[in-house]
Image (cartoon, rainbow, N blue to C red; front, top):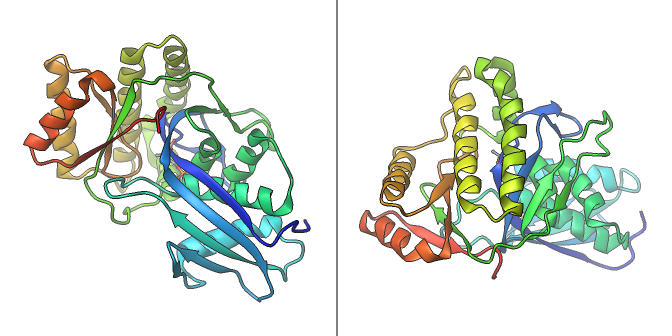
Length: 321
Ligand code: PMV
């Protein structure tokens, strides 16, 4: 652990799970109960610069603003960096910039920890394979394991107790027509973080019993659909998977409902578009915002429908910048 340069730099994209990770089988190692598959959004993500400094504590800034030591984000990041300190005395300066523009409302912890691990790899000149960096990013945030890659990525559940087989890999398939619509309902702080939400679900939700099996089945269905260029099966399965995950959250006690009235309006609009044979699906994470899955040929129709109802939407193309 000797820095090889003055400053390490890393950039990583955010990702959206098509088949979700919900539930940890080992909290300390961030090992998932089920595998997941995602699509990354290049252009949206995090750039991190990392410098060793002569100081007692880490100096962490987010989008140019220094964070207090006790800010939740800073504490979590410092705890993660503890894995990589030569001795307890060494400190880091971490400058994190999220390049998540206007309408995103996307979680940045995934791109954040992936970018940080890439910056560590650069600083110490490890030259580790992406799969190994994915394993390290997993310790910061489970979904970060998938943000080491562009395009589709599979995070393997793995079966080892030490977690050495739980990392993500890219699925080498490109879908140039795939379009993602970001529907921003609210970008404020979420009421319950994903770690707490997962734990509560695993502990208090009877419906959760069926989740691991469904999640593994959906994962396989989506991987096969991606490989055989079957947009309909991918979209349907992703939407069903997201709603099933939310069903487990709603059925915990106390209930965890991330949706807002506008989330439901947007879902209903998606369903009515499908009735008009415009093939669009949605997925949602631990928050109120929708991510639409559609093909480029339907973009104009989807845009018009959302605009007519005054719902903001922004489109991204995962395979063409
Ligand atoms: O990686 P975490 O702890 O932020 O959890 C992510 C959980 C979901 O976004 C809801 C699902 C997923 O697979 O990304």
